[in-house]
Length: 366
Image (cartoon, rainbow, N blue to C red; front, side):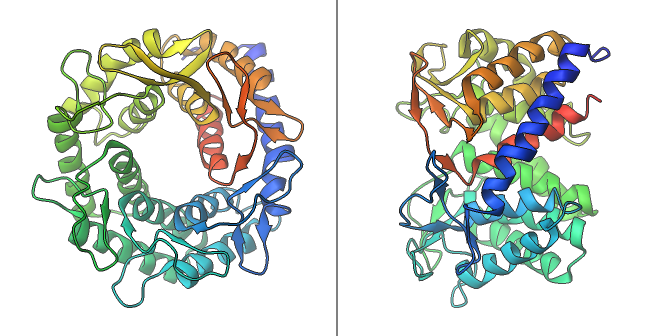
Protein backbone atom coordinates (compact mmCIF):
# COMPACT_ATOMS: atom_id res chain seq x y z
CA UNK A 1 0.00 0.00 0.00
CA UNK A 2 1.20 3.53 -0.75
CA UNK A 3 2.09 6.12 1.90
CA UNK A 4 -0.67 6.98 4.37
CA UNK A 5 -2.75 10.03 3.55
CA UNK A 6 -3.24 12.67 6.26
CA UNK A 7 -6.95 11.72 6.40
CA UNK A 8 -6.15 8.04 6.96
CA UNK A 9 -3.52 8.84 9.59
CA UNK A 10 -5.94 11.09 11.45
CA UNK A 11 -8.80 8.57 11.39
CA UNK A 12 -6.52 5.76 12.49
CA UNK A 13 -5.22 7.81 15.43
CA UNK A 14 -8.80 8.65 16.38
CA UNK A 15 -9.86 4.98 16.30
CA UNK A 16 -6.89 3.96 18.46
CA UNK A 17 -7.64 6.75 20.93
CA UNK A 18 -11.28 5.67 21.17
CA UNK A 19 -10.20 2.09 21.87
CA UNK A 20 -7.73 3.18 24.56
CA UNK A 21 -10.03 5.68 26.27
CA UNK A 22 -13.55 4.32 25.83
CA UNK A 23 -13.31 0.56 25.31
CA UNK A 24 -10.39 -0.92 27.25
CA UNK A 25 -11.40 0.88 30.48
CA UNK A 26 -14.77 -0.91 30.37
CA UNK A 27 -12.93 -4.21 30.94
CA UNK A 28 -10.54 -2.79 33.50
CA UNK A 29 -13.45 -1.55 35.64
CA UNK A 30 -17.17 -2.32 35.31
CA UNK A 31 -16.63 -5.36 33.08
CA UNK A 32 -14.43 -7.12 35.64
CA UNK A 33 -15.80 -9.36 38.37
CA UNK A 34 -13.07 -9.27 41.04
CA UNK A 35 -14.70 -12.03 43.09
CA UNK A 36 -14.47 -14.50 40.21
CA UNK A 37 -11.44 -12.86 38.55
CA UNK A 38 -13.34 -13.12 35.27
CA UNK A 39 -14.79 -10.64 32.79
CA UNK A 40 -18.56 -10.36 32.74
CA UNK A 41 -20.01 -11.67 29.49
CA UNK A 42 -21.38 -8.26 28.47
CA UNK A 43 -22.15 -4.74 29.65
CA UNK A 44 -25.30 -2.76 28.95
CA UNK A 45 -25.14 0.78 27.46
CA UNK A 46 -24.91 2.22 31.00
CA UNK A 47 -21.85 0.03 31.68
CA UNK A 48 -23.71 -2.28 34.03
CA UNK A 49 -23.02 -6.02 33.80
CA UNK A 50 -25.77 -7.92 32.05
CA UNK A 51 -27.46 -10.51 34.31
CA UNK A 52 -24.95 -13.31 34.85
CA UNK A 53 -26.01 -16.62 33.37
CA UNK A 54 -22.57 -17.99 32.53
CA UNK A 55 -18.88 -17.30 32.02
CA UNK A 56 -17.23 -18.85 28.97
CA UNK A 57 -13.65 -20.06 28.74
CA UNK A 58 -13.45 -18.56 25.26
CA UNK A 59 -14.34 -15.11 26.59
CA UNK A 60 -11.69 -15.46 29.29
CA UNK A 61 -9.12 -16.43 26.64
CA UNK A 62 -10.01 -13.51 24.38
CA UNK A 63 -9.60 -11.10 27.28
CA UNK A 64 -6.29 -12.76 28.11
CA UNK A 65 -5.18 -11.93 24.58
CA UNK A 66 -6.43 -8.34 24.95
CA UNK A 67 -4.42 -7.65 28.08
CA UNK A 68 -1.39 -9.64 26.89
CA UNK A 69 -1.28 -7.39 23.83
CA UNK A 70 -1.15 -4.36 26.16
CA UNK A 71 1.21 -5.85 28.72
CA UNK A 72 3.40 -2.73 28.76
CA UNK A 73 0.42 -0.61 29.89
CA UNK A 74 -0.23 0.04 33.61
CA UNK A 75 -2.11 -2.83 35.23
CA UNK A 76 -2.25 -4.98 32.09
CA UNK A 77 0.38 -7.48 33.22
CA UNK A 78 -1.48 -8.11 36.48
CA UNK A 79 -4.80 -8.47 34.68
CA UNK A 80 -3.35 -10.89 32.13
CA UNK A 81 -1.88 -13.00 34.94
CA UNK A 82 -5.24 -13.07 36.74
CA UNK A 83 -7.05 -14.11 33.57
CA UNK A 84 -4.53 -16.87 32.92
CA UNK A 85 -4.99 -18.23 36.43
CA UNK A 86 -8.78 -18.09 36.07
CA UNK A 87 -8.67 -19.98 32.79
CA UNK A 88 -7.28 -23.02 34.55
CA UNK A 89 -8.97 -22.50 37.91
CA UNK A 90 -12.53 -22.23 36.62
CA UNK A 91 -12.58 -24.11 33.31
CA UNK A 92 -10.01 -26.91 33.34
CA UNK A 93 -11.48 -30.41 33.57
CA UNK A 94 -9.23 -32.21 36.05
CA UNK A 95 -10.94 -35.56 35.45
CA UNK A 96 -11.07 -35.82 31.66
CA UNK A 97 -8.62 -33.14 30.57
CA UNK A 98 -9.30 -30.17 28.36
CA UNK A 99 -11.47 -27.21 29.27
CA UNK A 100 -15.21 -26.89 29.86
CA UNK A 101 -17.17 -24.57 27.59
CA UNK A 102 -18.69 -22.54 30.45
CA UNK A 103 -19.30 -22.24 34.19
CA UNK A 104 -22.31 -20.80 36.00
CA UNK A 105 -22.54 -17.64 38.11
CA UNK A 106 -20.97 -19.47 41.07
CA UNK A 107 -18.11 -20.90 39.00
CA UNK A 108 -19.43 -24.46 38.78
CA UNK A 109 -19.20 -26.25 35.40
CA UNK A 110 -22.30 -25.41 33.34
CA UNK A 111 -21.84 -26.56 29.75
CA UNK A 112 -19.36 -29.41 30.17
CA UNK A 113 -18.86 -30.10 26.47
CA UNK A 114 -15.44 -29.84 24.89
CA UNK A 115 -15.56 -27.23 22.18
CA UNK A 116 -12.90 -26.78 19.47
CA UNK A 117 -13.57 -23.04 19.20
CA UNK A 118 -12.80 -22.70 22.92
CA UNK A 119 -9.64 -24.79 22.76
CA UNK A 120 -8.40 -22.88 19.72
CA UNK A 121 -8.66 -19.62 21.65
CA UNK A 122 -6.87 -21.14 24.64
CA UNK A 123 -3.96 -22.08 22.35
CA UNK A 124 -4.04 -18.63 20.73
CA UNK A 125 -4.16 -16.68 23.99
CA UNK A 126 -1.58 -18.80 25.81
CA UNK A 127 0.88 -18.49 22.92
CA UNK A 128 0.64 -14.71 23.12
CA UNK A 129 0.70 -14.61 26.91
CA UNK A 130 3.74 -16.88 27.08
CA UNK A 131 5.52 -14.72 24.49
CA UNK A 132 4.86 -11.57 26.51
CA UNK A 133 5.30 -12.92 30.04
CA UNK A 134 7.67 -15.89 29.68
CA UNK A 135 5.59 -17.58 32.38
CA UNK A 136 6.54 -21.27 32.14
CA UNK A 137 3.01 -22.27 33.20
CA UNK A 138 1.68 -20.50 30.11
CA UNK A 139 3.85 -22.67 27.87
CA UNK A 140 2.71 -25.76 29.79
CA UNK A 141 -0.93 -24.81 29.22
CA UNK A 142 -0.20 -24.09 25.56
CA UNK A 143 1.34 -27.54 25.18
CA UNK A 144 -1.56 -29.21 26.98
CA UNK A 145 -4.13 -27.46 24.80
CA UNK A 146 -2.25 -28.37 21.61
CA UNK A 147 -2.10 -32.02 22.72
CA UNK A 148 -5.82 -32.09 23.42
CA UNK A 149 -6.63 -30.58 20.02
CA UNK A 150 -4.46 -32.96 18.03
CA UNK A 151 -5.24 -36.09 20.06
CA UNK A 152 -8.93 -35.63 20.81
CA UNK A 153 -10.56 -33.44 18.16
CA UNK A 154 -8.98 -34.88 15.00
CA UNK A 155 -11.51 -36.83 12.93
CA UNK A 156 -11.22 -39.46 10.20
CA UNK A 157 -11.36 -36.85 7.42
CA UNK A 158 -8.17 -35.17 8.54
CA UNK A 159 -9.97 -32.18 10.04
CA UNK A 160 -11.36 -31.66 13.54
CA UNK A 161 -14.70 -32.17 15.27
CA UNK A 162 -16.37 -28.92 16.32
CA UNK A 163 -17.74 -30.33 19.59
CA UNK A 164 -17.27 -33.39 21.79
CA UNK A 165 -18.81 -34.61 25.03
CA UNK A 166 -17.36 -34.00 28.47
CA UNK A 167 -15.59 -37.39 28.31
CA UNK A 168 -14.53 -36.83 24.65
CA UNK A 169 -17.37 -38.95 23.30
CA UNK A 170 -18.56 -38.12 19.80
CA UNK A 171 -21.57 -35.83 19.32
CA UNK A 172 -21.77 -36.04 15.54
CA UNK A 173 -20.94 -32.37 15.10
CA UNK A 174 -18.46 -32.85 12.27
CA UNK A 175 -16.10 -30.04 11.25
CA UNK A 176 -17.31 -26.42 11.03
CA UNK A 177 -15.55 -23.49 9.44
CA UNK A 178 -15.35 -20.99 12.29
CA UNK A 179 -13.61 -23.20 14.88
CA UNK A 180 -11.20 -24.40 12.19
CA UNK A 181 -10.33 -20.84 11.18
CA UNK A 182 -9.49 -19.97 14.77
CA UNK A 183 -7.48 -23.17 15.06
CA UNK A 184 -5.43 -22.02 12.06
CA UNK A 185 -5.00 -18.68 13.83
CA UNK A 186 -3.90 -20.49 16.99
CA UNK A 187 -1.38 -22.62 15.09
CA UNK A 188 0.02 -19.46 13.47
CA UNK A 189 0.28 -17.78 16.88
CA UNK A 190 2.22 -20.77 18.18
CA UNK A 191 4.61 -20.75 15.23
CA UNK A 192 5.17 -17.02 15.74
CA UNK A 193 6.67 -17.65 19.18
CA UNK A 194 8.58 -20.90 18.62
CA UNK A 195 9.64 -23.43 16.03
CA UNK A 196 7.30 -26.41 16.15
CA UNK A 197 7.42 -29.01 13.38
CA UNK A 198 4.27 -30.79 14.55
CA UNK A 199 2.20 -27.60 14.62
CA UNK A 200 3.57 -26.60 11.21
CA UNK A 201 2.56 -29.95 9.73
CA UNK A 202 -0.88 -29.72 11.36
CA UNK A 203 -1.40 -26.23 9.95
CA UNK A 204 -0.51 -27.26 6.40
CA UNK A 205 -2.78 -30.32 6.66
CA UNK A 206 -5.58 -28.09 7.97
CA UNK A 207 -5.18 -25.75 4.99
CA UNK A 208 -5.37 -28.71 2.61
CA UNK A 209 -8.48 -30.00 4.38
CA UNK A 210 -10.21 -26.63 4.21
CA UNK A 211 -9.47 -26.37 0.50
CA UNK A 212 -10.81 -29.87 -0.14
CA UNK A 213 -13.95 -29.67 1.99
CA UNK A 214 -15.01 -26.05 2.54
CA UNK A 215 -14.15 -24.04 -0.58
CA UNK A 216 -17.01 -23.50 -3.04
CA UNK A 217 -15.52 -23.96 -6.51
CA UNK A 218 -17.65 -21.30 -8.20
CA UNK A 219 -16.17 -18.24 -6.49
CA UNK A 220 -13.60 -19.66 -4.10
CA UNK A 221 -15.52 -18.58 -1.02
CA UNK A 222 -15.09 -20.35 2.29
CA UNK A 223 -18.38 -21.99 3.27
CA UNK A 224 -19.49 -22.28 6.88
CA UNK A 225 -20.21 -26.01 6.64
CA UNK A 226 -18.51 -28.67 4.50
CA UNK A 227 -19.33 -28.46 0.82
CA UNK A 228 -22.55 -30.30 0.01
CA UNK A 229 -24.16 -29.67 3.43
CA UNK A 230 -27.81 -28.61 3.46
CA UNK A 231 -28.56 -24.87 3.88
CA UNK A 232 -24.94 -23.82 3.58
CA UNK A 233 -23.78 -20.20 3.42
CA UNK A 234 -20.75 -17.96 3.60
CA UNK A 235 -19.97 -14.92 5.70
CA UNK A 236 -18.02 -12.04 4.13
CA UNK A 237 -16.42 -11.25 7.49
CA UNK A 238 -14.90 -14.72 7.59
CA UNK A 239 -13.58 -14.39 4.02
CA UNK A 240 -11.70 -11.28 5.10
CA UNK A 241 -10.50 -12.95 8.30
CA UNK A 242 -9.17 -15.98 6.41
CA UNK A 243 -7.59 -13.71 3.82
CA UNK A 244 -5.59 -11.92 6.52
CA UNK A 245 -4.33 -15.18 8.04
CA UNK A 246 -3.28 -16.61 4.69
CA UNK A 247 -1.83 -13.45 3.16
CA UNK A 248 0.33 -12.64 6.19
CA UNK A 249 1.72 -16.17 6.64
CA UNK A 250 4.86 -17.05 4.66
CA UNK A 251 3.94 -20.69 5.26
CA UNK A 252 0.38 -20.45 3.90
CA UNK A 253 0.80 -17.81 1.21
CA UNK A 254 1.00 -19.63 -2.09
CA UNK A 255 -1.12 -22.60 -1.00
CA UNK A 256 -4.23 -23.60 -2.90
CA UNK A 257 -6.30 -22.23 -0.03
CA UNK A 258 -4.59 -18.86 -0.31
CA UNK A 259 -5.34 -18.78 -4.05
CA UNK A 260 -9.01 -19.53 -3.34
CA UNK A 261 -9.39 -16.77 -0.77
CA UNK A 262 -7.51 -14.34 -3.01
CA UNK A 263 -10.04 -15.11 -5.74
CA UNK A 264 -12.97 -14.90 -3.30
CA UNK A 265 -12.01 -11.46 -1.99
CA UNK A 266 -13.50 -9.44 -4.85
CA UNK A 267 -16.71 -11.51 -4.85
CA UNK A 268 -17.14 -11.20 -1.09
CA UNK A 269 -16.50 -7.47 -1.32
CA UNK A 270 -18.86 -6.93 -4.27
CA UNK A 271 -21.77 -8.95 -2.86
CA UNK A 272 -21.11 -8.71 0.87
CA UNK A 273 -20.30 -5.02 1.42
CA UNK A 274 -23.21 -2.62 0.87
CA UNK A 275 -22.88 1.12 1.40
CA UNK A 276 -19.77 0.46 3.46
CA UNK A 277 -21.42 -2.12 5.72
CA UNK A 278 -20.27 -5.75 5.77
CA UNK A 279 -23.33 -8.01 5.58
CA UNK A 280 -23.69 -11.09 7.75
CA UNK A 281 -24.69 -14.05 5.54
CA UNK A 282 -24.92 -14.85 1.83
CA UNK A 283 -25.45 -18.07 -0.09
CA UNK A 284 -22.72 -19.44 -2.32
CA UNK A 285 -24.14 -17.54 -5.32
CA UNK A 286 -24.00 -14.23 -3.48
CA UNK A 287 -27.67 -13.81 -2.56
CA UNK A 288 -28.08 -12.06 0.79
CA UNK A 289 -29.60 -14.17 3.56
CA UNK A 290 -28.93 -11.85 6.49
CA UNK A 291 -28.02 -8.18 6.08
CA UNK A 292 -27.15 -7.59 9.74
CA UNK A 293 -24.09 -5.36 10.17
CA UNK A 294 -21.69 -6.49 12.91
CA UNK A 295 -18.74 -4.56 14.25
CA UNK A 296 -16.44 -7.61 14.19
CA UNK A 297 -16.98 -8.05 10.44
CA UNK A 298 -16.23 -4.36 9.84
CA UNK A 299 -13.02 -4.80 11.82
CA UNK A 300 -11.96 -7.84 9.78
CA UNK A 301 -12.69 -6.05 6.50
CA UNK A 302 -10.54 -3.09 7.55
CA UNK A 303 -7.69 -5.35 8.63
CA UNK A 304 -7.80 -7.19 5.29
CA UNK A 305 -7.80 -3.90 3.35
CA UNK A 306 -4.38 -3.07 4.80
CA UNK A 307 -3.01 -5.87 2.60
CA UNK A 308 -4.69 -4.72 -0.63
CA UNK A 309 -3.11 -2.44 -3.22
CA UNK A 310 -6.27 -0.30 -3.33
CA UNK A 311 -6.87 -0.53 0.41
CA UNK A 312 -5.75 2.96 1.46
CA UNK A 313 -8.58 4.85 -0.19
CA UNK A 314 -11.17 2.30 0.97
CA UNK A 315 -9.82 2.40 4.53
CA UNK A 316 -10.63 6.09 4.85
CA UNK A 317 -14.26 5.29 4.09
CA UNK A 318 -14.27 2.24 6.34
CA UNK A 319 -12.84 4.12 9.32
CA UNK A 320 -15.58 6.70 8.79
CA UNK A 321 -18.16 3.89 8.77
CA UNK A 322 -16.70 2.55 12.00
CA UNK A 323 -16.75 5.95 13.65
CA UNK A 324 -20.23 6.98 12.51
CA UNK A 325 -22.12 3.68 12.77
CA UNK A 326 -20.41 1.66 15.48
CA UNK A 327 -18.41 3.78 17.92
CA UNK A 328 -19.91 6.07 20.55
CA UNK A 329 -18.72 7.78 23.71
CA UNK A 330 -19.94 4.90 25.85
CA UNK A 331 -18.12 2.24 23.83
CA UNK A 332 -19.59 0.65 20.70
CA UNK A 333 -22.71 -0.74 19.02
CA UNK A 334 -22.39 -4.47 18.44
CA UNK A 335 -24.96 -4.83 15.62
CA UNK A 336 -27.20 -2.85 13.30
CA UNK A 337 -30.00 -4.42 11.29
CA UNK A 338 -30.52 -4.29 7.53
CA UNK A 339 -32.05 -0.81 7.85
CA UNK A 340 -29.12 0.44 9.93
CA UNK A 341 -31.05 0.52 13.22
CA UNK A 342 -29.09 -0.56 16.30
CA UNK A 343 -30.27 -4.10 16.97
CA UNK A 344 -27.88 -5.00 19.78
CA UNK A 345 -26.68 -2.36 22.20
CA UNK A 346 -24.97 -4.56 24.79
CA UNK A 347 -21.18 -4.77 24.60
CA UNK A 348 -19.79 -8.34 24.79
CA UNK A 349 -16.43 -9.02 26.43
CA UNK A 350 -15.38 -10.96 23.32
CA UNK A 351 -15.52 -8.04 20.87
CA UNK A 352 -12.35 -6.15 21.96
CA UNK A 353 -10.34 -9.10 20.60
CA UNK A 354 -11.53 -8.23 17.07
CA UNK A 355 -10.91 -4.54 17.61
CA UNK A 356 -7.38 -4.96 18.97
CA UNK A 357 -6.34 -7.33 16.16
CA UNK A 358 -7.82 -4.87 13.64
CA UNK A 359 -5.92 -1.95 15.16
CA UNK A 360 -2.73 -4.00 15.24
CA UNK A 361 -3.17 -4.62 11.51
CA UNK A 362 -3.83 -0.94 10.88
CA UNK A 363 -0.78 0.08 12.90
CA UNK A 364 1.34 -1.99 10.52
CA UNK A 365 0.66 0.72 7.96
CA UNK A 366 2.56 3.32 9.97
